[in-house]
Length: 540
Image (cartoon, rainbow, N blue to C red; front, top):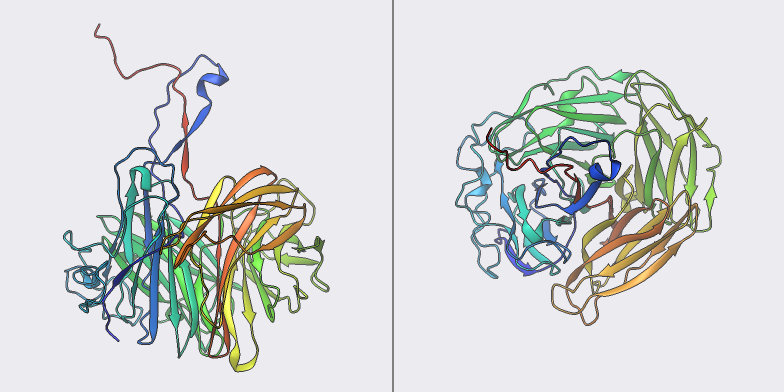
């Protein structure tokens, strides 16, 4: 199974990294002179983790940018990153893996990422070959593009979009693992590099293999620390060390979390921080019996957390919460369902000790009704401790279980997009579903389907959300479209909206699924108005 990376007409998904530059001049106190204007971003960086090391995995990358960005010239490309630790210094899987993207039927995928032991920073990994061909390359905003592979040595990807491709650039990585640990559907929204990430819901217990993938998109090395917190606080180090992990330029380093703890821990919160540079970080969880998925970073620690999109047929839900710092957090637990907010029986409140991970099983939470979990301070204090949270959701029973993870997600203030939605679901699979939640006050959103990867025309619909509810929405499909397509959600009015997308696909009787949160796509940046033009200084 060494088919090359094959380019297809494709679709969407994503998270966005933005670098903006603004000039601020001293004003005379006039607020209107310093009010910020929102301008489209001009450059976006994304990273995608290494999809899988399984010989029975198939991966599709889908990229999309909504129409409307500034300018006429630009590009959006993802290139292979090196697999740090192979010692080649030639870009690891980057030399050949991307050469045949967009060339159907060619069979030359020669990715050489060989290090699968989870050790970090042992090779000189000089990063991506400057001459490597892109794996995914967009040609027109508003049109999805895809590439696929079934190679066990498929690389992590790094790339940038600029000009009209930058605002809202979204990339989805979807992998089907047909057997073995982690079998099921693994979906990851390729993410923006940053310097700090929180991951509640990871595990180093027997039967689980959780890897944190650290990907450096830049031309200088990054140095990263990985800390694990269990129910008693920070975990003692194991055979490996999470301190000072070197991630070479334009390279990816997988770290096996079980090597970082002295004993197995069922529920841990992982904190990734970059001492120097920046990285993208995501955790791939693989369970011997219950499948697996990617764990995306939780939203920044806040007094309140919203976790959107718990499926109505969830057989079990485990909530994992962490309170950074030393202050304890007392929380109210609510489920915003289709008909309103309810309090889970027996789990009305939750006490979280500062610096420690708290886990609670919320079995039969949904009672056949899709919903979003809302955690808020018990006393509604403005000075309440901050938290991060995630749920592990299980569908199915016995040997036919599959799991996915939903972290606390930032609100959709303007617009967000998800890609890789099927226009014509295959037998045994279901269409993509959106969970749109208005936990505070009612709201109105517009849901737009892009053209399909095989053509067609966009279609839109308007959805009204009642206060304190979550609506399970089957998005429109493109008119006459084929292949996969992107779905963009725009908030039109009302209160905060929290959103996620679920992809489901039956796999040998297993209800395989994956859930991606939909935070705002960061397509604009606030640029203060200059009170005075200082671009030209008169000579005295």
